[in-house]
Length: 374
Image (cartoon, rainbow, N blue to C red):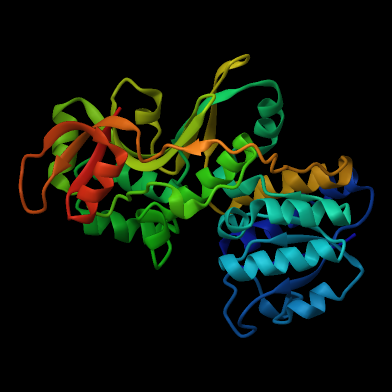
C-alpha cells in the first residue's frame, strides 16, 4: 500500500519514524507492505535533521501526489490552515483516504470536509487534531450518540500547559520560554499557542462533533496567557490555586457556551495537577456520567501515534462521518456569568468580580489581565 505524507516537520518525521520502528506490526495488520511513496515539503534543500534528505521520497509538487492513483492513504500534517483545507478537499474528492492533524484546516471546514469524504466513500480521520496522542475523538464519536453531553473541557494545549507549569514554580519568564523552544514544546512563533488560538480550534472541532452544527472558531471567547505575570502566579498561590488555560463547552436543551480562558483552579482539582506537556479532558454525559481522558497531548511520537491509530481504523473499518443536523442551538458564550480575577495593567493587586464573559473580554481589550475563577 502506497501512502504519502504532506508536511515533514516534527509530526511528519514522527509518522515516518513510527513506521520504521513498527513496520512489522503495521504491515501485519494491513496485510501488505507499506511504502511512503511521496513526502510533500516546501523546500527540497532544507536539512532534515536525523533523516538523510537523499534517502527520502521528497517532492514539492502537491499535484504529483494528487494525480498518483497508486497512493491510497495520505497523512496531512501541514501547518497551513487554508492550504491544508484545500489539499484535503481535493484528495478526498479523488478517492484518497485522509488522516489529518491539521486543526486549523479541520476547524475551518469541518462539515464541508465530512460531506466531501462521504460523497467519495473514503475515510477522513483526525484523532490527533484535538488532543495529540490521547484517544479522544474516536470514543467521543460513539459517546455522543448515547449521551447528552452537558460539559466537555480541560487542558488541550501542551505548550501553554508546560509554560504555566514552569512559571508556577517561580522560574523567570524568559528562561521558561527559552526552555520551551529548546525542547520543541513551543514553535518559533508562539502566537497560536500563547494567545489560545490552538486550543480554540480544538474546542471548535470537539463542539462541532457534539452539537452537530457549524461552529465558527472566531466566535469563541478566547483569552491567552501572554498577559499573565509573576504577580498573578503569586496571587494564585496565595489562594491555593493554580493557573491553567481551560477550553470548555457547556450546553443545555436550548443553548451552548464555549470559551478558552486562563483559569485559577483549586489545588485539589485534578486538572490543576496536570503538569508539563500532559493534557486532560473531562466529559459529563447523562448516561455515562463523568469521564476523564488524560495523556501526552503533543510531541512527535504521541501525535504520530494518534495518526497511526487512525490508519488502523482506515484499513479495518467502514468510513463514518459527522453530519450537520440543521438543529441550531443558540450561542450564549458571551452571556455566561462567572467569577473573574481582574488586574489593571501596571497595577496590583487585582480584584474579584462576578461578570459576564462579554464584560471580561471587553476589559481584556482595555489591557486588563483576566483569569476565570473555577
